[in-house]
Length: 173
Image (tube, rainbow, N blue to C red; front, side, top):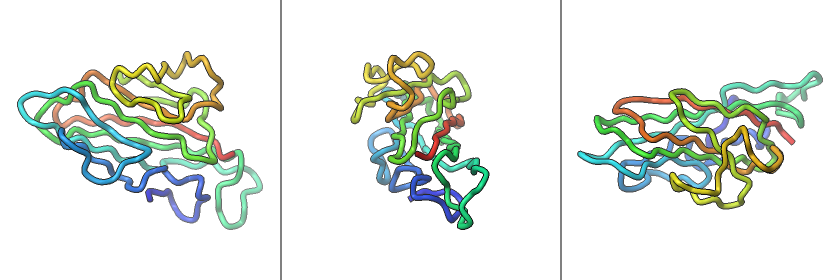
């Protein structure tokens, strides 16, 4: 599993069995349960989309545990890189991630580069399609931030050989 610098609380787990998830235009290469990236329309070949999630920052609290483990109230920032490694433009691209158990989504922390739409869902198993109504805009969710279970970024396209970096933060419960 993908984890940040050791030793960390199990709650820091990135929530996937593989830190790198690849979509080759027809199928997912590798295992992706709680995190993923895909696109629904392409022509002239298959895009090669990769998604890499890392722990990019941990803010420990005053009085940290001597073993360095994250404590309740600590903030963890994740970076999610989405890359199109082919000469084909990917269309209707969606990248999603489940908030791991033991963590709470941090208000206003969902960010992206390149004009991606930031969305959240309180559903246990939301539909991940590009047009899914199970997601709402992150800044206008009709439910409390503590109810956020999934986050996602979507874009009408990702250019050939382009990448975008997305970020979000969680708080250890």
